[in-house]
Image (cartoon, rainbow, N blue to C red):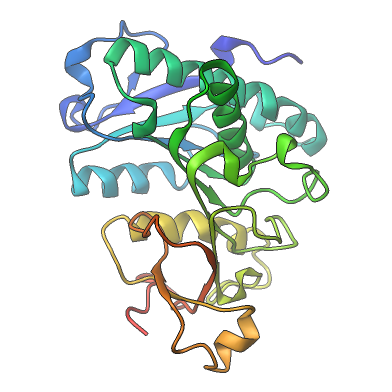
Length: 283
């Protein structure tokens, strides 16, 4: 089934909307509702998810608490809520193109620089973010400022070339959080900087073996906790074993999540707590 423009909806949240999302497909875009000087954080869910996503509301609340930001949630539930995963995968590129078109529309009507957009995608949403970035690059020769891939989907993308998945060329800065590497999430490094909490694999600390989706979901949970925290401190290492044995204690540190230093690159590792707050703090 082809992905139509109306199949992808966008809801704006900021201090002016009083925590109530404004449907940008149904509302005339009014410059008083979005501050063009502030960043636009665009949240994009994955498979079997929609506008009610478990991580959307907590992320919105953390950003509004931080302030000085516009948050736009993306819903493509008409296609994502299909039990047949390969069918959903076929919609990902088209959804990304529609997201890219909306970014261009917002940029033009609100006078928001393309560099002010930060796309945050979980699972298939990470690859949608990549396709949105490619769309803008192809159409306007511009790059969005940042893409954060939250455990980008691995199945159906494990052998994909950069043109067919999220890659580091899709934004000025691409950061990745791996939490179910080689399972539901991408195994290899595909960003400018890649984080591997607890080795980046299931089961994440505190996840039950019976909860198959727990580790995959943790990337988004770690991210929204990071918005108002600098306590996800990671260490650069060649692999988790080297980090775990304490052999990399003199190496560079990086803050995982929202407040990452964009001048850094490489693979970084950290431990987390079993439950919230998950961040352990400085190492």
